[in-house]
Image 1 (spheres, rainbow, N blue to C red):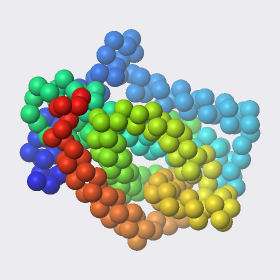
Image 2 (cartoon, helix red, strand yellow):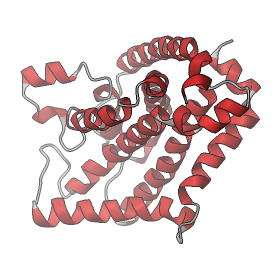
Image 3 (tube, rainbow, N blue to C red):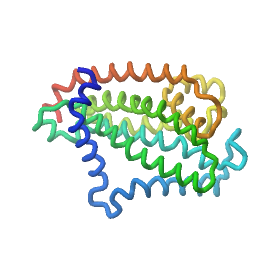
Length: 264
């Protein structure tokens, strides 16, 4: 059965798991779901103070008068969605051990719900940040929002690939979660979030292009800044590669899935 068939057949369960994951994050907090709005705004203010007021960072080729906080914000939230989706997806099966032992269901739904909840929450945060930036007069190319239709599904697939692979391994090797946090720190700086690819030396840029995130986050930001033209061929290649990687990662997850009950 294909992943789409599983999702469609168990869409009600997937929806329930996703809602539960979102609700569990804010249970017991005074602000509740308001944190989904407050957190991105607080981060935006922090970056504005640190990079604009303190470091006075300027990015080459950025439109005259546009601050560095705009440049970083347009790439930071897609990265945050990806990072948290992978992190939470990695521990999804392990943290739902009681459910895995008591109920017979497709375990991959736990991975899907963890990833979807992260993208939903950070999607709200990204929307809030874009609205605030627009209200403050920052020059966002609003037609570039249509590029989200191409890039977000690819970014989601990339997160699912890692979450399926690492989520299965985490059940058997508990060190995966600890190692992942270190790898994500390195990957953050190997992705053009704090800097444009134009500033990267040629030899290093060639190496960085092996990082699939480069082909999603950098073009997405350029589209929202109104810089450059979307390369449909490049998007198609990255999307196809992500789809094939997802199929392989899912096959690996399903191969180990029957043994989860004994290990969680």
